[in-house]
Image 1 (cartoon, rainbow, N blue to C red):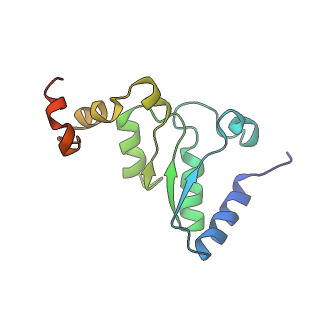
Image 2 (cartoon, rainbow, N blue to C red):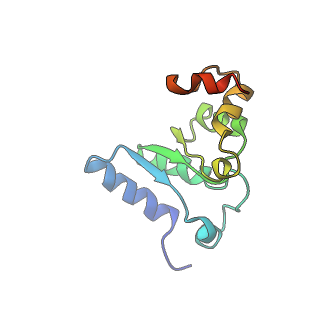
Image 3 (cartoon, rainbow, N blue to C red):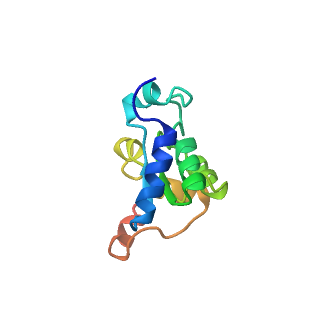
Length: 123
């Protein structure tokens, strides 16, 4: 296969860390991810293993993306030390209240900014 692969991403992350980069947002390019990384199918959490590999092999903090839609899955990625941050995109497009839903599901209270607290009472 020609093109960029995970091993080049790891080396690039190491070089970026040397010049002061603190966090890598790891993405295989969405629709092209399966072609670029056939070992990672485009199912839920499909890019987390790339974030995990870069985090541990380049020794740099990573942000995981890639169909992270279940709050418990997001929490598990963090607890299993596969990434340091979770970035949620499509789930927010489908449900702008995803963060609050996730907080309730995980038993976290008061994730609203102070100026929006009264809006919380409506739900």
